[in-house]
Length: 254
Image 1 (cartoon, rainbow, N blue to C red):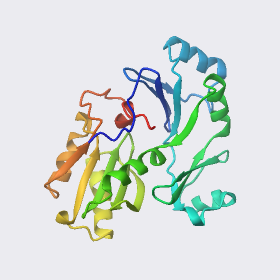
Image 2 (image 1 turned 90 degrees about the vertical axis):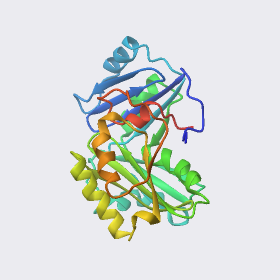
Image 3 (image 1 turned 90 degrees about the horizontal axis):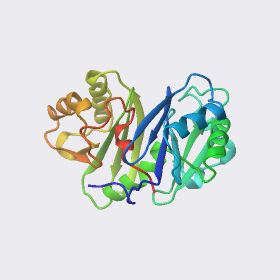
Image 4 (image 1 turned 180 degrees about the horizontal axis):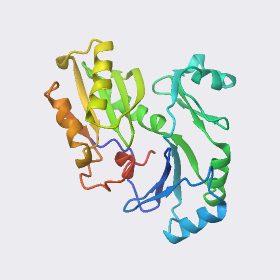
């Protein structure tokens, strides 16, 4: 299944905010800008963009360096943003917050950002849109899950972390982000979640977001306890091996 609800064009650019730098993803390119300072200077950023001819018109800055928190929309209070993260995530002192109302799920996604960073990118891309990994994915996964009898467990693998989202029909039951260094780490946390929610292999569908050679060992490990797994597009097995979030190399949220 293709999760994108728009046709990616040469005018689309996703800038992924990772823990160690920024990934610039277009239809046919991927470039990485490491974080050597707290925030790049405008001059160094413009030099990088000019060198790689990154002059796209549709640009999204997608945060994935910190997890998001989802709360039911009727209970959301913007002035409580910091409190939603207390005890769960150690945030940098200069963190600011953005939120997105996910109307189809009746939840609001709150995520840490950096206002200085956003201002910097808006200087070079005035029409920049700000988003978060989970806010981009959850509505599409909810729509995919709607009407299905079994629970649906979605896994998004990326460098150092993986995102896990469990749905019953169109309703989000749980989302979480776990660290991993290898397939054993990944399987440990996956088994933990399935045990916590009493999920037997025949009671849920398991989907990976994309299928990539670099994670073959992860897929093989899952198949030992769950015979039927599936992969949601985009699928680019030959994706840049160094890409920190390969699914997003060809996924551009609408």
